[in-house]
Length: 341
Image (cartoon, rainbow, N blue to C red; front, top):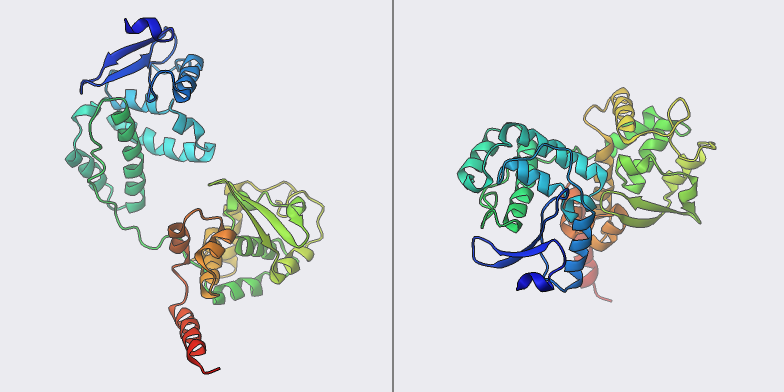
């Protein structure tokens, strides 16, 4: 009876918990399990996507294995909506796990097994945490498929990673500027990284077209955040000292725009030549966050520069702010507030 009002190729079934669900099955297309109820706009959107999907060239995986789960995960709207750079990062993590565990039955994995896998990577805590995050997403998808009722990753603990990228100090900034004066690509690169707080992948795309009325109109590609910042005097001096006609401010010795990785390698070498092997391009993004915090900028003001979407993200970058500087500013405000008029 249910079939008469459901769209073609859509059938109803009951999962192992007795709940009625719906799925799309058609020869030559992957099976799709609906999250929305029939008749809703969300259901129609899922149906359109299911009809357009095609089976991949991958060999058919055994049911309920990580091979099957990962193949299904790669077809989800959430995965397809991710930026290509994020997909590459997660895919490399997932595929390394899949190489040794693709045959494992997802339903039989418990928290102890996940914890054992992560503990074997304790010497590289960042890699362990990245895998933990990826496995968490995979097992959430398994719940959606009704393969599991729980997420075995939830009860595991992340590993402490330390402070991450080194945050440049003011002395290190001065040392770099002394080695690379105004008029050099090296100085312009540092000024752009510091004063825009952009990631290197975004910074290499910035050019004269982004400079408007004393401001830079910027785009943070990782989280699709737009920022408009006034051009600080030090950055203006670095920009004006480079008389260039290229579309991007920074180009290679052959006059071509840098790639993100190519620029990172080039800047790494320039830091070494300035006697700063501990410093990196990303550390200047932290340095601007530190400066913002030390200047008394609010969380919202700081995020309007760095492009962070949450206070927690900005606070993580600004944690290197000098406690002495902040304390001095705070006490100054207390004294000013209590002084007689």
